[in-house]
Image 1 (cartoon, rainbow, N blue to C red):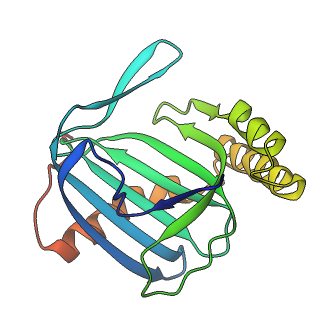
Image 2: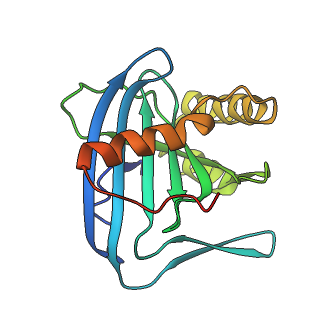
Image 3: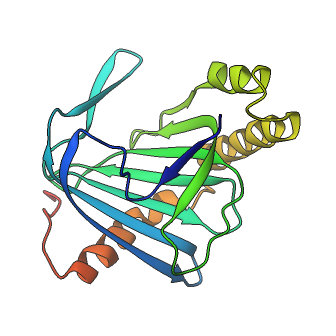
Length: 189
């Protein structure tokens, strides 16, 4: 079955209190939806492990900034800690995003994911899940090929510094925070 993910993450039970906002942005660097979740209360921090290194990506005071670029086969979630530091970019490979400006952003997940860390490390996740989804008939051959092609393209663009959304995260976080008219932790430098 295809997974549908909504920007407000209503199924995210560990987050018991949150602020949520979304905005449709169209300018020279980005066209699509941006959403922001500020985690106010959480039952347990969300920890992930990349090659033996544990990383907390969701806890009290953290932000999840999400980009849903119009016409693309991916969405980018930037995890930001309570000090304003970017922890990771999580790139969901999905069906082409095509939403109206007034809609809540959502996507139909195509299973593959790419993680980019601020250090420049890149990880591809869920290749087995993609194969199982194809073998089970949840996605067809064209969708599987689309996912693989999109993941290959994004990894190449990230490694050659041609994936601009990684560079706009801080600017777009400030934009969303200013729309809330509240403060957030400044970087220590």
